[in-house]
Length: 180
Image (cartoon, rainbow, N blue to C red; front, side):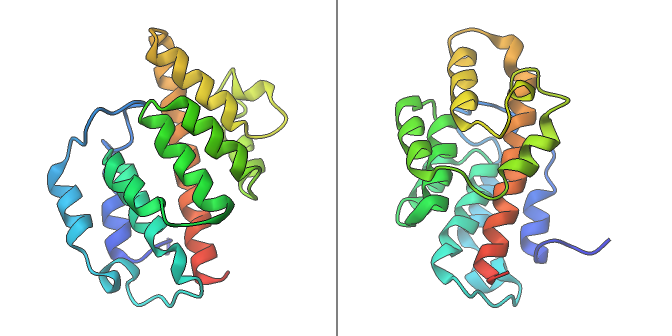
């Protein structure tokens, strides 16, 4: 099977213990966070030519997000404009427990092309999302709030939803950055 991303990104995404906590207080793997921070743009891209270099911060920030380094992810997502930047900021704010900010960023982001695929990928496994007609970031924020305030039965569902969301939004960001 061909790689979806350059070697550096593939290696960072191999960690199965990443993205397991719906509301991470801090990163667990500081060594990986340092590797992401120290990687050059060339290492990150593996020779790929970006047609939209303004999206490069989202690609690096997404790797920080994946490894629960939400402050680092936020610094990279903050300067990126548009719906995709807003959606990344919504994802980061939600996992940081900043639900009002997450709702505001989600409202600005609106609907993105990967939403229908994301919905199909979780419809049978998520009792909450499965009742929707499309991916619902507001619902995901609400589930995160319920989890934060004690509904720990939501943890497995939140992990699944956040994993599908990350995988598809990161892939979409990569393809947009390459101009595909």
